[in-house]
Amino acid sequence: MAEQEQRKIPLVPENLLKKRKAYQALKATQAKQALLAKKEQRKGKGLRFKRLESFLHDSWRQKRDKVRLRRLEVKPHALELPDKHSLAFVVRIERFPNLKSVRELILKCGQAKVKNKTIPLIDNTVIEEHLGKFGVICLEDLIHEIAFPGKHFQEISWFLRPFHLSVARHATKNRVGFLKEMGTPGYRGERINQLIRQLN
Image (cartoon, rainbow, N blue to C red; front, side, top):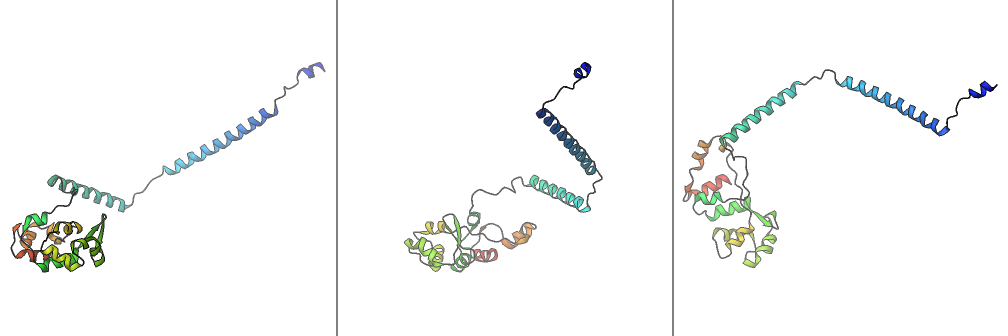
């Protein structure tokens, strides 16, 4: 009897048993997740096939890059856009356009600059609102003031946005043909009107 009393198993607190059970369950779930992750990795390491289109796109991209680099070697600053608008058209081609050319240019390409916003010149109220103090109340007055400069030419020209003229499509490809059509820069005389109509 005395020996049986000595062999009694030591009691473990209940909270410690709960902690052990929870820890064992956590370890089992972690082992399962690790096994599943390993299987997924093995699946992903199988053969990967590339489509023919991807090879074609890669080769086209490489060709385009080569062409772009070659162009940059020939003209280093070709892709850089100027920060400010330049008046190259006015400076390089000399002569005075007639009233008809100015009218066509303003009616087709005319845009106003109001509070850093571009507004097309389709309404006389905008012109009267901003240029009424200079005696310009409609589009015809504006055209006349630009064609025959007066005292307020500077203010009226600031009101207008620069005109973007369209250049022939083949100008970038065939420079010689473009020069034959447009002529060389410099004094034009009466032919300035023909050039404006060609580019307008």
